[in-house]
Image 1 (tube, rainbow, N blue to C red):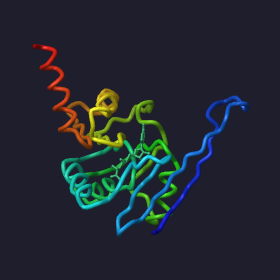
Image 2: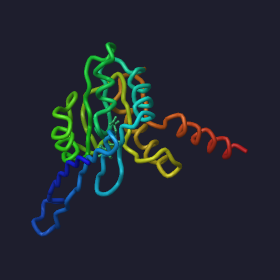
Image 3: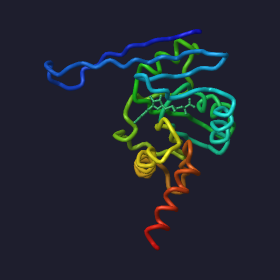
Image 4: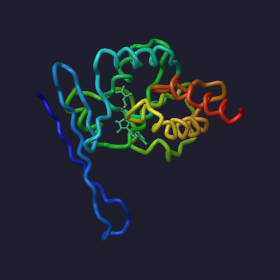
Length: 183
Ligand SMILES: C[S@@+](CC[C@H](N)C(=O)[O-])C[C@H]1O[C@@H](n2cnc3c(N)ncnc32)[C@H](O)[C@@H]1O
């Protein structure tokens, strides 16, 4: 088992009396696959099915691409192999994730901005935005998917494309809820 553990300490506010918090970032290698844990939540894995899903999303992207969430940098790898993609920028909430990936894989793919995607402010617009900042494809994550889509509207060029992990499921839930309301 190979484990890379990164602790990031940050002051949560401007007041020196406010507490600091620690993020525990782990990349654990098991049976040849990598698993990313953030504060004891399993955030990403690179098992065969996950590779297929991420590659499928990456194959649809083009131009200047913005990714929400670095994870294990899997989609960034597939995007970097896509000839239609000119530029990859990722917004990642935890700098410890980037440090752990750098240590574990020896490099980071594309540009990285450390920020919370939902709060990011920039005038830059992207041709495609890809979201993967929820742990599960479940009803509980629907609210975050909608929040991601709303935020993306401010960051995308007219006619640009928004993609996301679990998008078909979330869009199905949105349609289902709309249909139920109309009955
Ligand atoms: C599922 S992983 C992304 C996997 C990535 N698509 C890949 O191919 O490896 C989610 C990542 O999003 C980050 N994250 C979670 N919430 C976020 C937020 N609000 N803004 C930016 N990054 C966030 C997590 O720290 C984690 O690194």
